[in-house]
Image 1 (cartoon, rainbow, N blue to C red):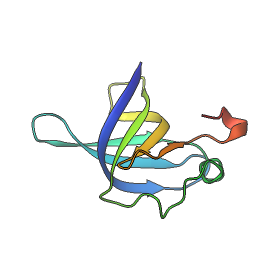
Image 2 (image 1 turned 90 degrees about the horizontal axis):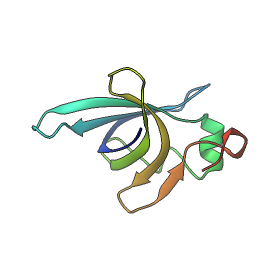
Image 3 (image 1 turned 180 degrees about the horizontal axis):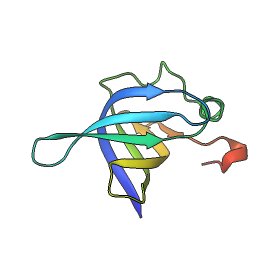
Image 4 (image 1 turned 45 degrees about the vertical axis):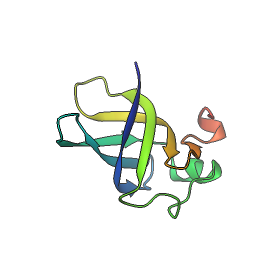
Length: 98
């Protein structure tokens, strides 16, 4: 099932073969829960307009994607939406596009 998670960026790791985004998310009771989303390759993300200067720790973003099969707070990122509404697809054209 598709999910949409809003939280504050803790870390972005642009590493091969896949990048990872880490968010702190309010669980509704005031507790912060750390989520980890796997994204596309760094080169695919850059082709879609993402750059390390775009998103910094502390920025609020919404990540749309799919939850991991297990019950963990992990998922596969499909889109990242910044606070100003800018949308970044995380997979390059050869990897499925937006």
